[in-house]
Length: 182
Ligand code: AMP
Image 1: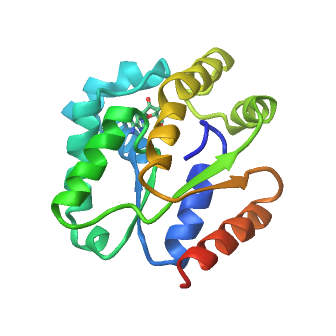
Image 2: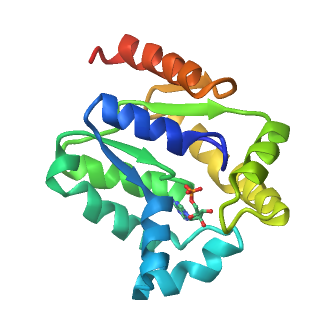
C-alpha cells in the first residue's frame, strides 16, 4: 500500500520478480482495459480519469478472477488493492474460502509534498495537479482506514519510501527476508 505516486508500482514489480509472485496491479488492469476500449474499460474511464475509485463490486470481481489463476495460486502480490474497507473485508473472505490469507501488508511512507512532486514528474494521462491532489484526498479518506482494519488481521510493515529505487527495494527486502526468508 502507499499513496498514489509513492512508488508502490515500481517496488511491487521488483518484489514480485524477485520472489516469483504474480504481480496483481488493479490500476494496470484498469488502464489496459481502457486502452483496449473494452466494455469494462469504457465503463470505468470517467471515474479513473477524475481520480475517484472504481466501484467495489466490480473491483472485487476482477481481483477474485485474477487470484484464481494458476500463477496467483502459487503466491501473489497485490498492488493498489484493497483500497477501501469493504474491499479489504471481501478480500480476506474470498482468500479464506480457499484457506488462503495475506502474509503481510507493506506500506510505503512518503510525505504529501514529495508525492505531489513525483506525480507531476510522472506525466501519466490522469496526472494533472488537480487530479493528483484529489487522488491523495481519496487515499486519505478511503484507503488509509484500510490500514487500520488490516492491522488487526495481518502483520503490517511500514517502509520509508524516500530515496533511490534500489535503496527502497533494499529496505523492503530486509523486511520480507525477516518475515519470510526467500
Ligand atoms: P493506481 O495505478 O493503483 O494508482 O490506480 C489508478 C486508478 O485506478 C485509481 O486512481 C483508481 O481510479 C483506479 N483503481 C485502481 N485500483 C483500484 C481499487 N482497488 N479500487 C478502486 N479503484 C481502483
